[in-house]
Length: 154
Image 1 (cartoon, helix red, strand yellow):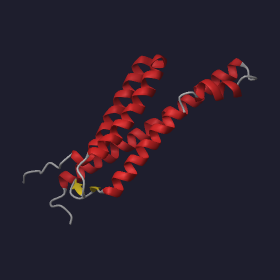
Image 2 (tube, rainbow, N blue to C red; image 1 turned 180 degrees about the horizontal axis):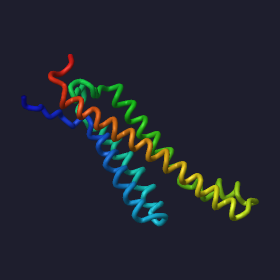
Image 3 (spheres, rainbow, N blue to C red; image 1 turned 180 degrees about the vertical axis):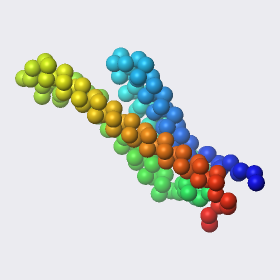
Image 4 (tube, helix red, strand yellow; image 1 turned 90 degrees about the vertical axis):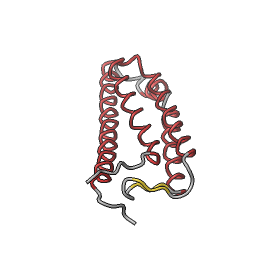
C-alpha cells in the first residue's frame, strides 16, 4: 500500500518556528552568553516572519494530515494573534534584565544577585526546552498519524 504524503503548506508557519527555534537554541548553546542580543532579535524576527507567512497562506479552509490539521480564517486570526503576542512579549522583555532586576537587586549582595540570575536562567531554559519538546512531539504525532491514516476524515 503506497503511503500518501500530506501537503505541508498549511503547516509552514509552525515548521518555520520549529526550525528557527531549534537553530536559535543551538546557536545560543554554542555561542553562550555573547549570543543573547542576536538570539533575542532573531526570535522576534522569526515570530514576525511566521505571522506574515500565516497571512500569506491561501484563503479558505485548508485541511492536511488527514483532516487533523485545519486552517481557516479563525485559525489564521488566532495564529497571528499568538505569534504577534509572543513577539511583543519578547520585545518588551529585552530591557527587563538591565532595568528591573538591576533596580530590585541594587541593595542585595553580589552573591545573591549571581545566584538569582543563575536560578532564573535555568528556570527559563527549562520552560523553553519543555515548550520546544512539546512542539516537536505534536508535529511528529501529526505527521505519523497522517501517514498511518488509511483515508481522510470528512
